[in-house]
Each structure stands twice: as C-alpha cells, then as structure tokens.
Amino acid sequence: VVVVTMADGCDDASQIAVLTRLVERGVVVACASRYAKTGQQVGGPLIKGLMSKVAGLSLYYGARVGTRDATNSFKAYSTNSFVRSKLKVIKVLRSALNSLLRRGDFASR
Image (cartoon, rainbow, N blue to C red; front, side, top):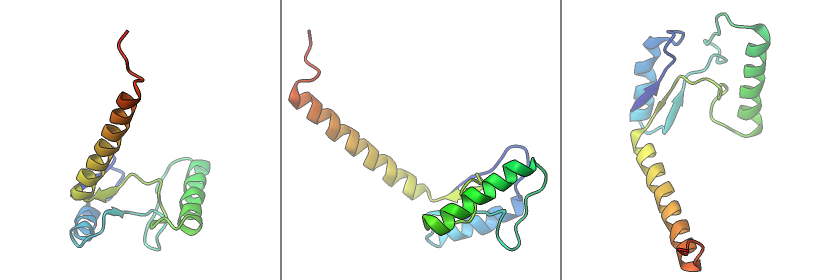
C-alpha cells in the first residue's frame, strides 16, 4: 500500500490506518474526503475551496467517480495496481515502437 499525503501536515494522519485497511480489503484507491459528512476543510481561500468542492461533486455525480473529493491528494493506492498499470503501459509502448520499426519510420540515414 502506498499512501500519499501533503508534507505540510494538513491531512489527518489518524486516517492512514483506515485508508490502508480499505486497500488491503481490495479497494484499488482509497480517498479521504473533505466533503463527506464528517470531513472538513480548514483554512484556505474561499473561492479555491468552493471550486474544489464543485469539481469533486461534479465528478462524483456526473462521471460516477467513486469519491466526492477527487482533487484531494490524500489517498492510499494498491501497489499491485501500480505494477499492473506499468506493465500495460510498457506493453503498449513496446507494441507501438515495433509497429513503427516495421513501417520503417526510423530508417537510418
């Protein structure tokens, strides 16, 4: 499990165990939310907070993203998902490179 948190201490470190348990139970990404019933945002410019909340709720209801706070960086990730994603990217890049080489786009001059 990889947990990303802000270096300025604004995230509630007591939530790390909760996020980690969610990932260990099979969730690929567990997100803390400032906009959940028990969440809060302390400080910061009013307009920035409003824009963040509108963006998060729009993604939650409109795009069915599984969190109300997609703009929050306080998340826990499954390391297995990172490995699978990296392998998929490598496979796609390798395939694209092989295709270009077969077409002769990289012929030496």
